[in-house]
Image (tube, rainbow, N blue to C red; front, side, top):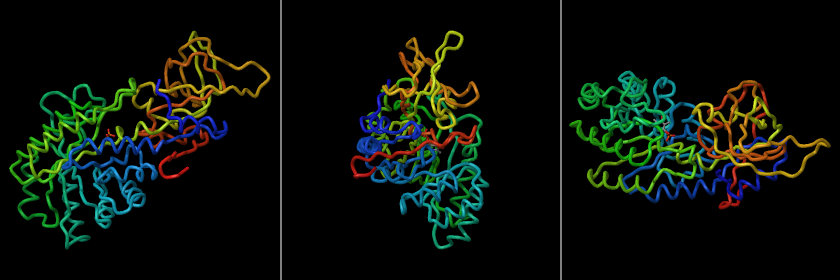
Length: 402
Ligand SMILES: *Cc1c(COP(=O)(O)O)cnc(C)c1O
């Protein structure tokens, strides 16, 4: 059971029941984590944060001292991130960019475009000619590479080397590279290659993927200044105490960088940077038995924290006991050790954790769901059933904040 940090625990216990559910973020813990990640990465590695994992402004700002830039994948993220962390380098990627989004990105002077197709390239070239005729726009070509040794096999969300809407097929490389090197598109500058091939990889798998991408990119026969090897560093929701081995990853990237002097390596993690700093806290409303199993129904549910439903896992959690009980009748309480934690939605899919270790949990107790700092609130279907939205608390012990 992962336990909330003391600051998070105190906040959860001081909120009134009506202020729950709440997302509580420990920005100090986030800073410490990001500082560690930055410290173990070698100098030529640039660290970008993939904003889609959690675009809360306070999170983007807390990460600012430790990241080199932000990866955005829509016009909405672009405008939001540019406002939250003004002046920071942005990389704009994603399939299906509209002309309006590309134009907005050019007008903002976005540093890097991750080009996903030949059409994407042509639209960018045409708009660059119109919007920024006196500059050359930096392009990374995103390729959907097949990684040779099957290292993606066990990953949660593999999207490389199989049919997907992402990136260019590697066989298109010669033709597309020609468009960027024969003067066809003078407003674009080929900077290198981008690949984001899977999510949920441990450090040895990530290194193997990174080596394959760099080897492929540097063998293309054109000057490659940068390779972005993507994100996807694993977060283990079943064993939350096991963290991605940033130290080993940094060591491996050092060797890779040493083997390619002058090459800038870039990574763009999302989940593994912010997942651990966020907690979804709520209150048990009722406890009941159904056909031999015990259920605790909590305020809120998967419309606020969709992660367990989308990933098909049990969100790690811990119970915070509360002694007050406002009613004259006995508190509903679990008889056993294992209790499924369900939300308020009228669908059997609204399960946050099945058979969680919550011995004797009672109505009125509080539950803190861990690893809720990434792909949590911002991927959830908030309006389903029209329950109130959660509160948001950004705890900041270093800056004298709230
Ligand atoms: C989602 C995404 C990321 C971040 O992935 P994580 O699994 O959160 O680390 C990075 N790059 C691209 C292109 C993405 O789509």
